[in-house]
Image (cartoon, rainbow over the protein chains, first blue to last red):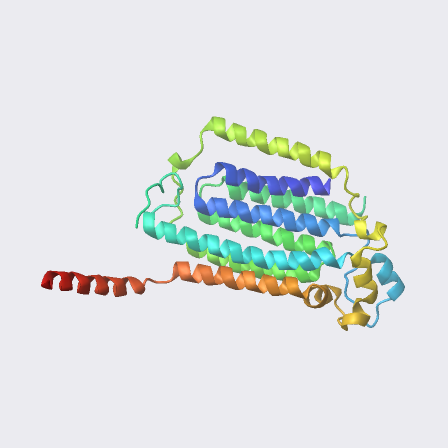
Length: 115
Length: 197
């Protein structure tokens, strides 16, 4: 159920990319898809009654080993979130440049190549 | 059903509503703000999923992203009406998305159910080794930091490279044109020289 709703979030972004003609809207759709995928990967590593994988002086090691959530997806999703910022910043820079050149965000109106 | 799952369902419904508003609203600034609501929902979900590091990073990244997006849309938030896709194409897109949703739900049956991750079923999974020996082998109390900076250090190096390259590309694209004047001067000289000939 949780997985399916997370997939619906991903598909909302996919629908946005398929139907919208505004470049900023397309980048917003990309960002929504990325959020869905990141959340799905973290959901896969959750354990019921899970504890945070940080060891403290007061941590009971036996309880920690039995109930710690998966640290591997969390670490890789941390990487993925930061890379997502980089790619979307690059996309927004391209949008702003296109707006300066053509005066519109609409991909249907951006047709001719201007030198 | 555990209480965390109920919280997550409520948050996911909130995020889907915010995403639909972000997709369908006309004004670009409102769309960007709805995207911010999706990001904050993600951050709270990470808190419920026992991932505080991710929650902090998500908030920081979301703030930066909103600053970029608002800078891009400021003063040009008019969406032209004729840019909209025709209704048959829109119906086709909805059909494709629903087909993908159907396949996804079939595929999700093969996954272990929520709350019982794969690494607790497979004893030789690397995550078990990270949890058991992470503190001893790396000296890091935070196992996530141990994975990022020690076990998967090369991944983090690659991540830093990708981030540097993409931000460098963004800066190059957005740079105010200084070289064009230079080329113009060169052309001017060339035309002068040709005129002299």
